[in-house]
Every structure is written in structure tokens, then in C-alpha cells.
Length: 204
Ligand code: ADP
Ligand code: MG
Ligand code: MG
Image 1 (cartoon, protein in one colour):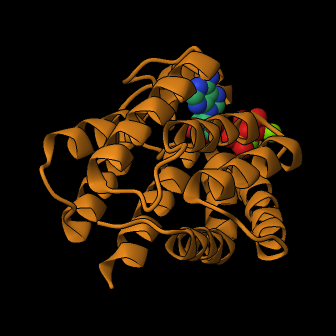
Image 2: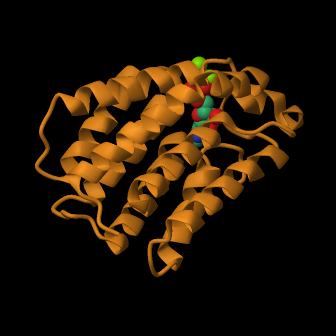
């Protein structure tokens, strides 16, 4: 694996494509157990990210991801903006001076991002939030010895799907308690798109 500025740009662009394509789906998911704005929040946020990064030149991947983080924090309303913003900021901080980014550095960076989300959201694993995708993905990346895009996508998908069976303890869905069982967590679905986009981008 080698994540360069150009690959990083392609990753962000692919995330945006997926989010725009699934905007209504994400909103439907949030309608069921939240306030029905997740698709709107994410679509606006990643559109702004694309606009921002296309207009700039970046010396390294860390710089690129920092701009993505800042944009998500400032442009996305709701809980998910600061949380995804934190994730990208932690990625950026962890990847400082590392260009191109290799697999061990990237795995470590995803670990830092997962930790950042947990702290920012005061959430643990099993509480039906995006933590349920980020933490298992960090563990998977750290345990796998090499980058396998298809396996990465499959792992992210099953982590996302597992949120359906559990009861929400954080975020708006927590108001529903056990009535949230049977519904996917919207933020975990978006997180899945982020990892699926990474797998796609680095496949070539
Ligand atoms: P809001 O809930 O403010 O309307 P969004 O709908 O955009 O924001 O995002 C909701 C998603 O954010 C949830 O599906 C969940 O994955 C995530 N989330 C909410 N609260 C937390 C938290 N405390 N910790 C981690 N993730 C959270
Ligand atoms: Mg919402
Ligand atoms: Mg909201």
C-alpha cells in the first residue's frame, strides 16, 4: 500500500461520490432512529471537502487530510461533523511527515482516529455508533500484515451490518433504546462508505 497525495485526493472524491449517491438512503436510516438529517449532513460536508481540496495544492497526505477534517468540522451540522472531523484530524496528525504513507503508518493512524472518535463522542464499542465500525477496522488493520482491499471492504461491511442487532446507547438513537434494534446505525453506514472508498481507491 502506498497512499500518496493523489491517491488521497481520489479517496476523498470516491467517498463524496458514494455519499452523494446514498444521500437519501442515509437520510432514511436516520429517519428511522434519529432526526433524518444524516444524508443531508454528510452530502453537504463531503461536497465541501471536495470543493476545498480541489482548489488547493498539498505537500503531503497529512496536509490534505487536515483540510478535509477542518471542512467537516465547520460545514457539517449535527453530531457526525465533529466526529468525522476528529477522525480525519487524527489521521492527519498521525501521518505527519509520512509521505507516501505506508501500511503500518496507515494502520496506526486509523487506530488514532478510532480513539479520537471514542473520546470525542464519549462512546464505547457496542453502543450502536460509528465507533462500531472504526474500532474493529483499526483492530483489523493492525492485525493484518498487508493491505488487502477486498478483505478490508468485507470487514467494514460486516462491522456496519452488526450495528443492526444492537441497542443504541449514544446519540439520538439512544432515546429509542431497544426500539433501535433492527435498524442500521446511519453513521456506521457512512463509515463503511469511507472504508469501501479506500479499498476501491487503493485497488488499482
Ligand atoms: P445528529 O444525530 O446530530 O442529527 P447525524 O445524523 O449527522 O447527527 O449523525 C448521527 C450519527 O452520529 C449516528 O448514526 C452515530 O453513528 C454517530 N454518533 C452520534 N452520537 C455519537 C457519539 N456520542 N459517539 C459516536 N458516534 C456518535
Ligand atoms: Mg441526524
Ligand atoms: Mg441532526
